[in-house]
Amino acid sequence: MSLTLQQQLTTKVTSASNILITFKKNHSADAVASSLALKLLLEKMGKHVDIVSDGFVLDTTYQFLPKSECISSSIEGINQMKICIDASQIPIKDLSYAMEGQMLNIIVTPKSGSLSKEHISTHTGQYKYDLIITIDTQDLASLGDVFKKHDEFFYKTTIINIDHDIQNENYGQINYTNPNVTSVAELVFEIAQLLDPTNALVDEHIAQCLLCGLIAKTKSFKSAQVTPATLHIATRLMQAGAKRDEIVKHLYYTKSITTLKLWGKVLSRLKTDPTGKIAHSWLIQKDFDELKTTPQKVADVIEELMVTAPEAKIIVLMYEYQGIMHGVLYSQALKNAQELAIDLSPTGDKRIAYFHINQSDIHEAINLTLKKIHERLEVK
Image 1 (tube, rainbow, N blue to C red):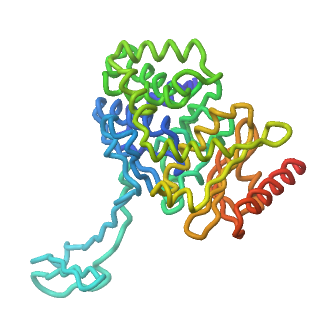
Image 2: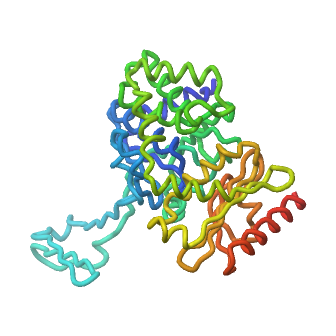
């Protein structure tokens, strides 16, 4: 009799010793908070757990979350190389090593006789991790260099894929996906119940991370996707010790004046097409110079646009910075962001695409982008 999905997941997690948690390069607050919750949960079960996301830089907004400083920007020491010496015929007296420039020299001195290449062999050791858990990641390519530089490791290691996006490609050996929930935080809470039905594992720190994911994804329970189940989980998390007021304070009431002014510029320029389905806005170099800031907060601006124009299915933000015209395209529902921006050589994933345009005028760049989007919509 075959195991159910839930049984497969609990069996694999229970048997694993060293676990890698990873999420897409263009991550959400839900992904960050849920990954931290899962790390804390698995460590309480005695597992060694690392969290890695390509190029990750911790936003000050999330520094209040426990162990947020533990998220790395790249994988280190993924596997070992073993150098084996047959000492059955040539006993070894001494072994040492020395660096000469970029060359590592390993010096082996036999007790008697001489060593030859026939006595030496090399073997690839086991991978550092025996399980991969991906969070809020629709496809492996979205992981960036974490996958690109270690694709063999991903292909040879069991993946548990946790996601709520309907466009998820179900690339894992175990796919714990559900498009009917509001966030991956809900799914991680479900997994916590599977791993321990008594709910003893979910302490105040885990609850705090999960509630943060819920609040961030639902805009403090204001989004239309909120269900009674979502509110029930939020209640249980607060009963476990999560502090809603503290989370709301950090997510929404600690924005710098600079960030608020940047939002103001974008929102004041917001326009929609005649159908109201495509919204766009822009920033120019002068905006960044006046506010003495960088495009690091562009992702937050996109989220603000999503709340301000919820009826828009496609959102485009163009910004000029250091002589380059950048574009961000966010697509909701079933439209693939990368496909819509395919003529602009985008990077990113199905939900959000990043691209550059060889234009010197921001309005020309916007018009060209919108034209390309309309052409792709007509093709589709």
